[in-house]
Image (cartoon, rainbow, N blue to C red):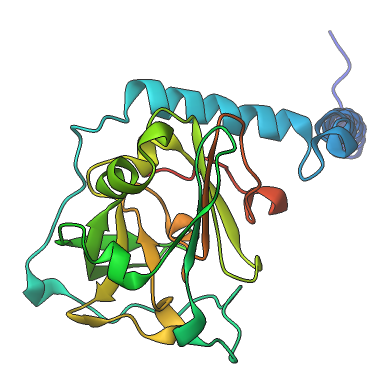
Length: 249
């Protein structure tokens, strides 16, 4: 007949097993942490395995979900809320609206073009009331009005319509975003100069901001001062700080 373990011996046996399992788990966790951080310096922002996963997610979304025919939901004016200011990167207090112009750099290194608001207002005006979504988890139904980015390109930079990427920055370069061209050319992407029925306020990016409802708010750059087209992924403020470059909804 096998020896029966006393309660003390059974507790000791279980404690040893638990300690061994805990030790094995710690080794696995440490190895996983080293693997995740192995490419940190190469990636320049976050560990390369995590960056690889973000790029994989982007490819899945772009190939399986994104389509110019897929429109985000729009809302009646009765649903409009008050959009948070949320972020003032590239929006200095001493901004001179009278000196503002939009510097446009076409694909292929052509001569830059300088545009004014009067130039932009020659484009057909479109408006949309969409749910502006922030990566922080909140959203606000907001109305934007301005020109479709695709129509802006067709008029002022027709040779750039087939670019792979679009870069935008504030006049002082303090905030900048990179966009995949299909999202930028989406029919609901606007260069907006009105919000909720009024001209843009300074804190919301006057005189011109991007309204791109297929992206999270971090891509909806305020006070655009520069737009450039290219075929390589441009710098992006939040991508450099660990966020997804694509940032699509």
